[in-house]
Image 1 (tube, helix red, strand yellow):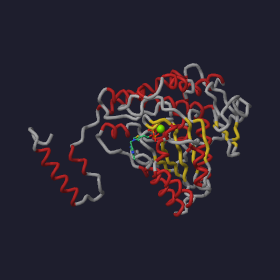
Image 2 (image 1 turned 120 degrees about the vertical axis):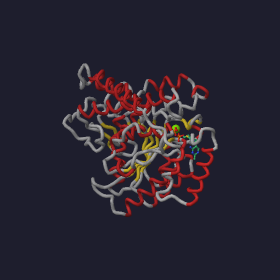
Image 3 (image 1 turned 45 degrees about the vertical axis):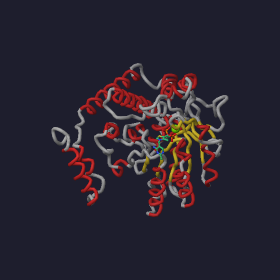
Image 4 (image 1 turned 90 degrees about the vertical axis):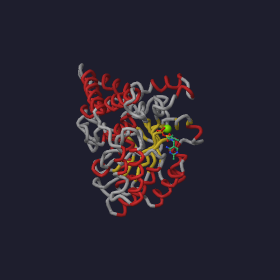
Length: 393
Ligand SMILES: Cc1ncc(C[n+]2csc(CCOP(=O)(O)OP(=O)(O)O)c2C)c(N)n1
Ligand SMILES: [Mg+2]
């Protein structure tokens, strides 16, 4: 699938998927999966919601998804390295969550609006935003530099769960403006984590979205941890089942399976855009790295757990599938790796070249037209800066 083409159709030339099995042997019946960890393709699966989930991509689209996965992982690794070298203040890695993000990100149609947390670098990439953008934020040289309306991708939100309320209000507005209905309708997606489900904001968002039938998909990446707190400290029931209590459908998808993540998200978005209201997707995945670069996960989880999830790696299974089905030629993987390497070098060069802003400019974009209070704070700050030896710096 072409970069920046999130609306590409799932219907395509290659009609018959290779595997005819309805579901993998021993597969979790609660988990929608279309690609096993071994790279076996499942033609279609009936979810516990009775919906038949399937994708029907062309070879080119399959290769495109693989390229997306590799690129976002490489750029993320580069950002982690930059933080380690002191070039970023902090980085929240998406390692392990590439399929949940690329699958859902590519399922968005151009008109759909996304509300991310601080970890959605893969979705940001799928929205066609320059991957340099979040690095300015984490380097502390800007406050997030993209235009949410231009890219239909809101600002990163660090306040846990807050964006689910923003998304609900926005989605209610979409419905009130009559922008739902048909393929051209607008749907909204709100990303959040397993830990966020314990927040009041998220539960309030569920209530409002439900009773106002908002065109909204709640996309929870259950990566098993909220910093050091494991999932069992958030819930006694699978997270997707919470939706039932609020009056809308919930579904759990294999978040390490890019095809299933795409299929489930596309279905939920299309339901939302056609006026059928909200739903909850629990993308069951794993945070392979630290919570952020300020965290040391070896303090609270054991290596064997990480190893078990390594066997479910989202990129490895897509690679195995492409190889098995011979839909790549010999140099494809090397070519993708080389592109990723080049883009990472380019990213690094541009980060190192970012100018440091004058500290006083932090007051510039707080309000569109400023305020007397802000003017006072700016004056105080300028005076404070000038008190240092050598003047303003
Ligand atoms: C309202 C609020 N409370 C606490 C925090 C501190 N905090 C930052 S990340 C985090 C854990 C979030 O876990 P989860 O929702 O599972 O998302 P993940 O980081 O795993 O993607 C917490 C508690 C915060 N940013 N905002
Ligand atoms: Mg989490």
